[in-house]
Image (cartoon, rainbow, N blue to C red; front, side, top):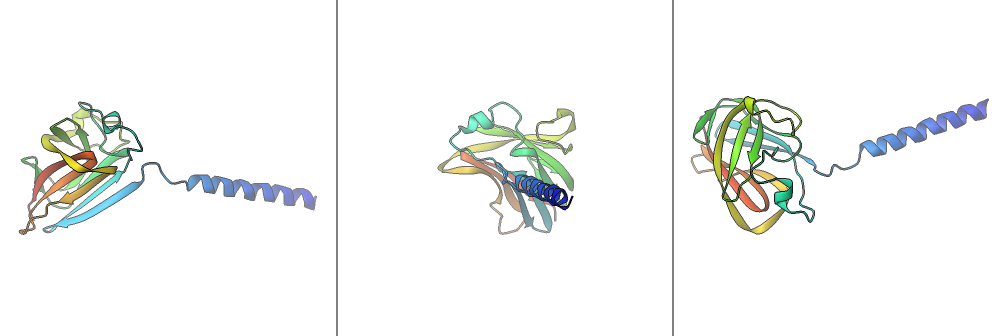
Length: 176
């Protein structure tokens, strides 16, 4: 009986370790959290970062199609104070960030529904606007979101999306 108990315990422990090691595999598109203060406004962007891994960017972020602007869950944008983005005021709050890639410009979409990235609902859009896309000399292997070009007055900056040889900047102004 003791032998049987020891065998059962050993199997349970081995099964637990196997399950635990599977749960701790690195994600193919690792999660990233960007936190930046511009003026007195805290901006937090939570997203997953897909890599090109030898694939063409336009096969992953298809031109003319809504993209979750990252991988896995929709990219989350949280702002502590209102900002002016795309020429429109965006209230403090938490939003999803989607985009529609294009050759010379991308459409940036701010959406109020937080969900798995492929569950986009246009009825939940807060705003859409065009942002200029430029070609870069260097290649960004892993999709990256930055807060770039923070001005000397600490009120103006740009939300930047970089991937492949493309940089998309959406200028914004903080109210505080």
